[in-house]
Image 1 (tube, rainbow, N blue to C red):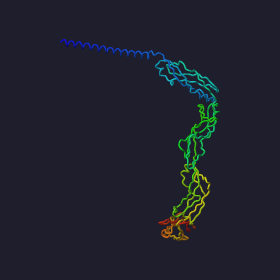
Image 2: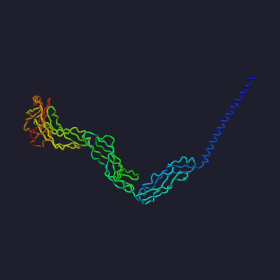
Image 3: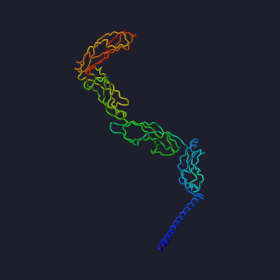
Image 4: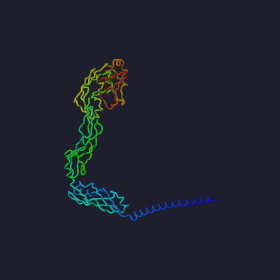
Length: 426
């Protein structure tokens, strides 16, 4: 029984100690809350005045357009001025102010002559805040007459590599404008002697190109003018850069009907090649120059020699200045055969039904081809046609009509020469 009573007393002692600890923690929390409340009260209710210096606040010059329009004046010194401003007010306001919230202005209106002027700085600050001081109350500006001059525009290669080989060469660049209008204070314009379009192309150049270049102003010593009070118009220029190429190009011929080939003719051209020059893209793509189109049906000789006046394709220059070429056509492995062809009624196209009379119903036609092909040719393989469809009954008289000849042959056989028949129309 005694042991039980002792245990109960021990239990009562532990409960009292835990309660004291909780009371101590609660007191600390209440003290902290009280401190926060007092601080918030002081800051938001009492909120004592607070000063802060805002650094690098820009000064804006106003009404510069007015003096430019009225008196042709321009400001060439005084821009980009920054000063420090000290402001005062409640801390919750002042502590949030930045340079963007303060407007500092200097007014140039009323100035009518060039010279040096000291202008008062006026400040506009947020409501509830007082301006205490500025690191400077004034700003000095220099004003001069605004003038414009025209300077010659040239070009300069700053980064340009021409492709090597194939006779590439650079032509004279053509700039879109001849002069540049430069505007600014008269004292600075006197230093400017010319303008330059600076050409810079990163890749290796192998053809003509057009680039747009920034225009740079240059003084008499060749130094670049970077004055911020000087403007130029235009500020960029279009530059066309011609790139030329030279090469030897073979002369060649083409055929009207395709009867000639390497097996049945030997074509010799003298000279065989000529040197040409032109735009690189044109010359690079030029593989040959066709100097004549040969009508195989009009080549009646075994060896035919023609002199051809050379005519260059558009954009191609004849560097060798060769005016003509000789073309020799030699027939190879072919011969000729003359055959009498009879024209009958079925060979005549007469869609208008005119009355007519063939003054000759036979025509001698000469054919060219390999001997074996000519030997196999017969009148049955040749179709002749006369077309009277362009004539009507209102026409009378004797007309000469071309004879159209169509050949059916397993080989290359064609007529040489031109053939006509005379027809009397009633």
